[in-house]
Length: 267
Picture 1 (cartoon, rainbow, N blue to C red):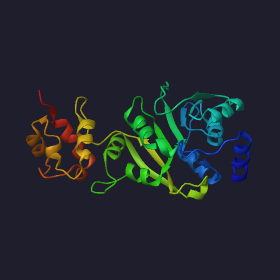
Picture 2 (cartoon, rainbow, N blue to C red):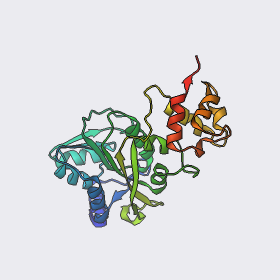
Picture 3 (cartoon, one colour):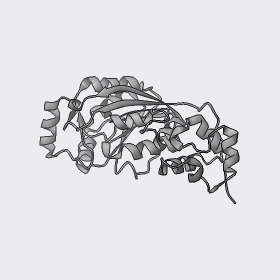
Picture 4 (cartoon, one colour):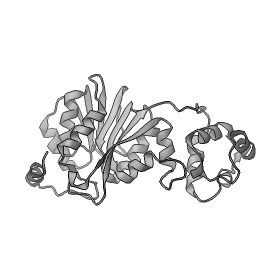
């Protein structure tokens, strides 16, 4: 949709974009096609879309996928989308962060994520089960950079590690604020997450998520002190070859996995 089309439709629906709901509608067709190209939808796949808004992306996804599950929180937009009677689209009204929905593999997530829920939605998909084969989302540029961050950078943190544990991260395109209406105050990015297995296997009972959260809870403190409640911490650091003065932000993904594999809760 063009800027003129979006404005006209919003006027007809008597809707003013909500900052609280993170409503910034895509008005650049080039970005829409970049998202679709990166998504590479197959005819046997289900696609989950969060915040379909006025349906510009939804319509294109429905032309390609077996089924689209679209979750819209705004009741006015939900009613508008329902009135379109799109084939092969399961429309759900609710808060995507809290709403339960069932999806069977193989599936992908393709969405212009509302800024207000981008982090919790990414956490839900990369940590939940079943996991998407691919995630293609437009998010704030700083969120995209967090997902692909390297050790030692200030944007390297728990979300980085939880994502990279199961996904290869590619920032496919930087998106100008002028590509949206209303224009946000920050740049956005199309980020692509491709499912992969880590080079080091994580054991089933390893406390990876727990120690990562602890390690970045107070990131300037030494990691050894933050996870002191676990058994054999000193021996684990030695086995992995980590300095006892290291902070969480200094460890790469493989070191975090190896450390988690060595640790067990103190009985």
